Image (cartoon, rainbow, N blue to C red; front, side):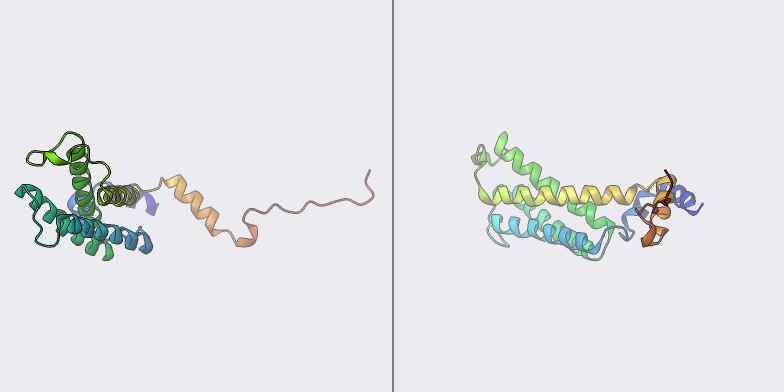
Length: 181
């Protein structure tokens, strides 16, 4: 009955409480990979900007680069610490530049029409792969954090994993009769 009470309590939690909580369900290697991807996003945008004080024009684009770099670095730090808010911040720091890249290459953005049709930019393609990978991992992690297994699934898992190893997946040997025809 404890599972039912945890599910009820979880469904009534406020979103702010959930965001500030620790991520205890995602394995540490997954958190480390996600933090590495978030740092990669910061490094890619730092390189594309032309260094720390890059000369991106227009100014809103330069400020966007700064926000991506700072946001993804903070997200990496929060993910290393196992904080749920790191996933959300990381999503914002990856979805934003991915959308900007796709818009700048397809229809163009105000003040920077020179990139329309420039799909062959290697650093941009690498950025799309890194950001897309982070988005997939973050979506799975957040889904696992917000959805609890049903009561029946939890009980079935408990029964399966509570059996001794010698009884799992093995059938009992049949008795054979000697001389019976």
